[in-house]
Image 1 (cartoon, rainbow, N blue to C red):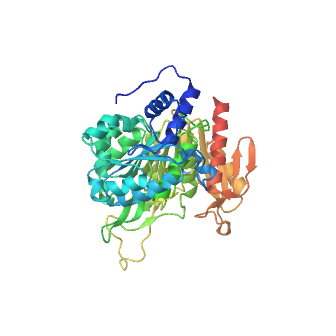
Image 2 (image 1 turned 90 degrees about the vertical axis):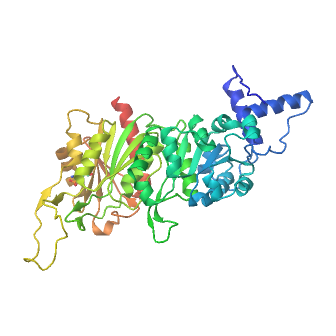
Image 3 (image 1 turned 120 degrees about the vertical axis):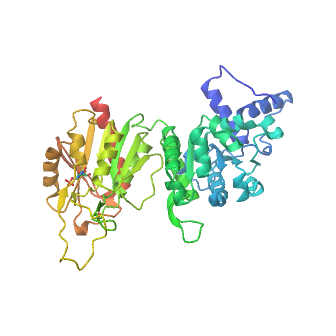
Length: 476
Ligand code: C5P
């Protein structure tokens, strides 16, 4: 059947058609054909059984138990591309979770993916056949890779293997999965999954950076055990629920509620590590929870976020460009490279000092007495950016983690560092802030001090993002 183009149709009609097509598990073209056929037969169009291989949905009513925050994914037509890795077994669970929320799923599997899960099991869980071949006369004629790429609202690649990411980054299209990914104009989410050495390889990092630059949104990978005995590290695929959650979060903020759309934000997070010798370092107790929450909230508000993070044990927030660093000096150069930006939020707990001379070898005990470490001061990243003549962001925001006279010290810091706002918090031993989940902020600006109630670090982040959005509107 040839394809059908409908022009000059109002948006409301298009929307009704779209909803109806999703409801019946058909493409919009298929739906029009059904309406015409039913009209010819003098019938009211019926729901009818879904065609094998077509997108299938639940009824128009919300699925039982779908909470408000899950509505973003409802009636979405999602194309899942399954790459060939051991994590492919999780794709069955992912399909179930997405369908549970009312999404309609089509699946494309690479050849390697079929070595881990069968098209039959995937098709059974998805409620329609899994597509595997680029040159399959039956499906290419009826559906085809271009239709697969376009007749969906978004694409999730899970697991996104090193090979599949490389193909995507280089625009290869030698199988159905890569051809679909090249042909699509829809948002693409990837859930990378591979051995930590493959993930850390410069080639994968290059491809990954290129994909982020192309607008691909990544979810994970996580730290953890690998399938290979005894191996662990960064490279585990995000869990199915995490993937669903990340997609929902981004979708639910992708409509009108994007007050930071088009804005560039830099966020620093976590501690820095200053080496003493090849095995020892100076660090602090920062968990990175607050900085990462700010990055996440800014992405959800539509910003393009670069997160410069010291070593933390947290998953990378979906949708951010993350630059991982160890030392204060690395953090400064990463921030400078990420400029220009509209806003910079310095939430990292940067080590104030580093060792003047880092030992080339491990410092041994029992030599000539206890070693004396000479320290030198690290560059102040916040002050450097706040005082920059060129490329100073419109809004430069710092944190002040204090154990006494919190507001008083924060006011002095605001002046000394030259920033616009300071978020001061009490990190004394009993406060539970360092590493904890809650925070109590005093917002110190040139206009005065505002004390926020104690709230979760996520809520602090959302409050801050809302304030940033309002301030940017005022300043422009
Ligand atoms: O001087 P103090 O460490 O208390 O300042 C805290 C603020 O300054 C935080 O926003 C922190 O991220 C930033 N800072 C920085 N570079 C440093 C020290 C602190 O950016 N070397």
